[in-house]
Image 1 (tube, rainbow, N blue to C red):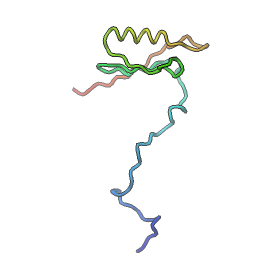
Image 2 (tube, rainbow, N blue to C red; image 1 turned 135 degrees about the vertical axis):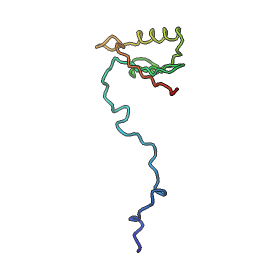
Image 3 (cartoon, rainbow, N blue to C red; image 1 turned 180 degrees about the vertical axis):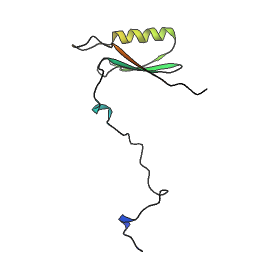
Image 4 (tube, rainbow, N blue to C red; image 1 turned 60 degrees about the vertical axis):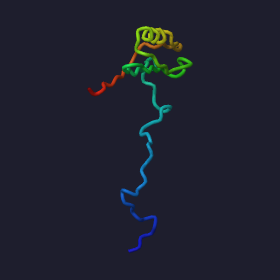
Length: 101
């Protein structure tokens, strides 16, 4: 039986896969829930720290986990400027994933 080309079903092996399209809202469309929060991704050797855009000329920075660098991180978070409604960063959110043993 002939089926028009547009109506033919392809097997799952020949169906083109969707490219890695992100679900949900894009970053620019997401509401800011905590305007004075910094996000910190804690790793064994380094930490990625992000503050809200517009608070610093480099809103994402990387720090090693040595004491000197941790003190620099703390100084930076204290120095990040706020706006007319808030003094600056007053909340921190940490994320750390444990590696399997």
